[in-house]
Length: 291
Image (cartoon, rainbow, N blue to C red):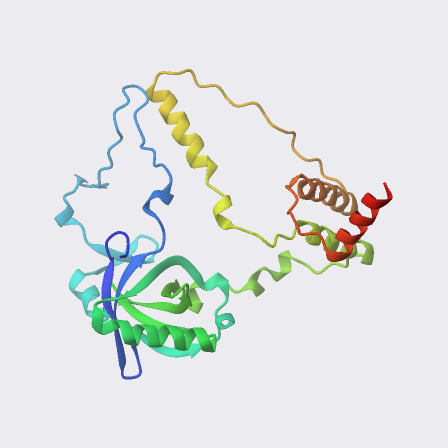
């Protein structure tokens, strides 16, 4: 059974096939960190935010309208009813428009918002499994549109660990083109020795057993400890500086020092136990007989 409460329910539609699904957010609610409030230093009262007009002072919510500044200090008022007419109908459906290869959409378009989509009810199980297997075996993603809050959003449907995962993606016009920054990243030549050493460094730092779960948000942990200490009335002291800022050195020296550190890190890891080969066992037996 899925943990938590679903945030959306509807259908995945591709062709004439409809798959009833429920959506669950992929991110944990505990991953948002710690929020701090603004207080008045003199009395520690929480700061309030009031909406004011420079002419009439504080205004009520029903006295506020939306406007667009088309020229300096000049606005056109846009009424809520006019905005509502622009909104797309909430069809409660994820409409698959095309099937594309996984590398068709570059990672820079992903917004970071992801849904886990699960079958909604017994009738959804078969078509859900069919869609998952089709995408998985053909190494395809579904490019789709879904209406959320009256706005058409783009989504990429991907098969992952027996689940259909819907990841929000940005419109092309919302993402800056890398060509805008080419002038700030000019092409320069690197020597063959520098390139060889850099590749040796990447080989030394390569991880075959990489696990993202090993990397945690220590800032949140430290902030929690700080707040707890404050609550308990303890004296807060700054932690000692663990190491000096690295000095700027030339590229080859930086690569060599990095390679040394990478090798030290690799050697510090516990060695994996491996069964001795037949040849090794035979050599060991002969040494024992000789001795």
